[in-house]
Length: 249
Image (cartoon, rainbow, N blue to C red):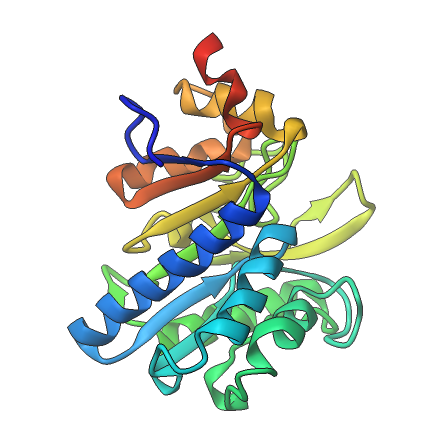
C-alpha cells in the first residue's frame, strides 16, 4: 500500500511482498512500453530483492508477457567474470534470463572481466547504439535499483561525488571499501529513465531511507540522493521495517 502523504513511496508488509510488488511493477512497465513503442528497455539490478522478483517472473509470468520484445541491460556490475557468483549478470541469468530462454542478442551485459575503464567505454557505446536517445542521452523505460545501508545505489558509493565526470554515461569507479573497481551507469543515465523503481528492505536501510526521503541529503554522503532529480518518475518500494524511520523525519 502507499503511505498517506508520501508521494512515490510504496510501503509493503515484508520482503516477500516486496519481491512480488517489484515483479508486478516490472510487468506493468513492460506492458506499457510494449504498447507504446513495441519494445521494453530495462536496466536490471543486483541484490536479494531483485533476485526474488526475477525468480517470480520466470516461474509465474513466463506466458504473461511478450518477452521477445524485452531488451535487458544492467545498472552496474562487479569486475568479475560472468560465471562468478559475484556477478550481477550471473544472478540475473540464473534466475530470469536462462529460465525464460531469452536470446543472447537481447541481453546486454557489462563485461566485468575486461579492463574496467575499457569496459565502461564499451558499455557507453553499446547504450548509444541500442537505446532510444533524448538529447544525446540513452533512455530506459525502467531502471531497477536497490539501496545499500550506506545509501549507495548501483555502484555509486559514499565518499566521492556521484556527479563527477558528468559527461560520462558509464563509469568505472574504484570502491575503496572493497579495494576493487566497479562498472556503473552514471546519474545522467539513471535520472533520464522514464521510470526508476528503487526497492529496499530491512532494518539496515531505515536510517538512510529516512534521510534521503526527507530531502536535501548530500549525494557525497548518500549517493542515491542524486535520483531526486528524476522527480515523479522515481518510486521507492520498501518494506515496513525500512520505512520505520519516516515518522521521525
